[in-house]
Length: 211
Image 1 (cartoon, rainbow, N blue to C red):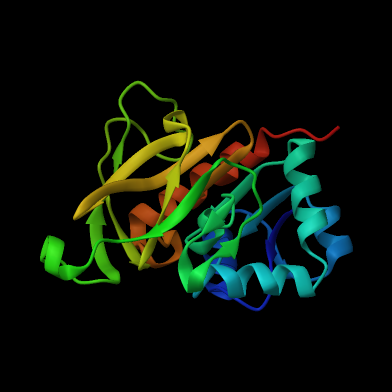
Image 2: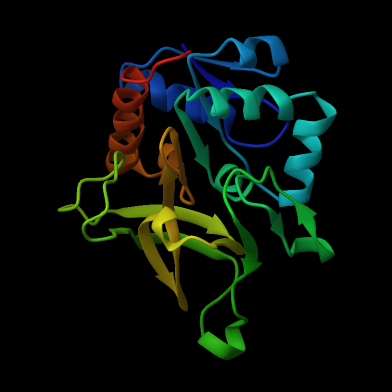
């Protein structure tokens, strides 16, 4: 069973319905015990990084989420769920992350520097990094996905970046290592191509093992 983590932030039901549409059993829960027992985890998120972290902390969900990642269970972060994987963010004067990956979450350059509005909102093209294994997106595909964000992750390790997008600057649209994958876009809002990503995660999760 895939567990969609409910910590008060994110398009939970939309993500659940998207997974079910591609044949994956999924449940939404904020129960730490259920998260601890999950076969695979999806962590969505919208809004501010600090608020999302506080939501996880207040519900006692940080420990079971980190334990699941450490156990090697398949994990998918969505939008702020990607940003939470990093060490910290600059939003609101500084916000903590889960520290799964090294790096920071920073704001897009202002419109006066790039001519592009912030937040980055709407459809944009996602391109896999050549030669890097990406379980969520075939190298040959360059789909347009739906984004809504003002901040983006800057991984300290470039090898974490599996696909990129451009909005004034190139940024990580998909990151991953081992059992942990995350996307900055919203697959549940990205129509057919988004469902393909959720289906690919389902296949990835089906191949996962637990100790």
